Length: 298
Ligand SMILES: Nc1ncnc2c1ncn2[C@@H]1O[C@H](COP(=O)(O)OP(=O)(O)OP(=O)(O)O)[C@@H](O)[C@H]1O
Image 1 (cartoon, rainbow, N blue to C red):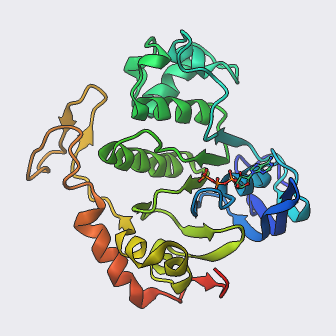
Image 2 (spheres, rainbow, N blue to C red):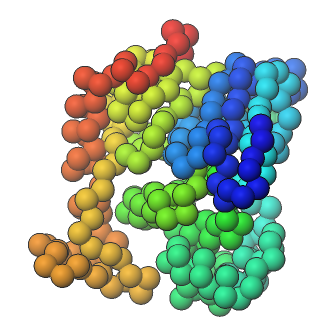
């Protein structure tokens, strides 16, 4: 693949995987995986523990060499990667600002801008070990965004984050996609909420079991076979109708004339999937099959 140097965003498919397989320690960790990621789209990989999500993501961005099939990346592709496990010890003394420059060079102004963008500028001098789970994930997101990536790869970005924090993080990720125009490859084994902004869900279990819109995957028989009917009922597509903004210091700002009800910062009652997600998931049955590609051997 080639890329025009004048274009800030590669116009072609960012990643194209065909029949990708990874063989380690005498077995195929994943096999026959087809996956493509186009500029600006959000693709979510879901699947049980050990189903090959991290392996697939690493092969997609070239950290891991496939043993079968091919993986093509657009020329000049810049990736921002937040791994599932970080090679840093959170207990060591380190400020958030220092964390930003561990892997990339950046000016103080650039660091401030990106911390502000993810809502943790006020924690610039805070120690990493003092951050809450959600704040830490935001700091990692900021670090990945410093690279101005075409593709942001987030391996379980809501780990250690409570439900309302999870919703807020998903919202931030979709805002970043809108404002920065980057594509997002999101990995999740959380099955209860999938961002409605996800363009495509790819359900893995050593191979691609099914894929499609979040709603069509939730309703697909392959997904039900893999996770069971209860999980399928529980999977909710999170849709956000937000009438207010959570400020970094915990205050809530309402637009003029907006905000017909008020609640404390961090509450989840009108952010959660239960309000709308279940409807979306059950209403999705009609649109099942339309977008989902499904194999019979889940
Ligand atoms: N280098 C390796 N050598 C041998 N086996 C490996 C290697 N890396 C991963 N595995 C195994 O491959 C399988 C898939 O691992 P992977 O981390 O991709 O799964 P995952 O879907 O991301 O899981 P989780 O949800 O638990 O993070 C697991 O059984 C894991 O133990």
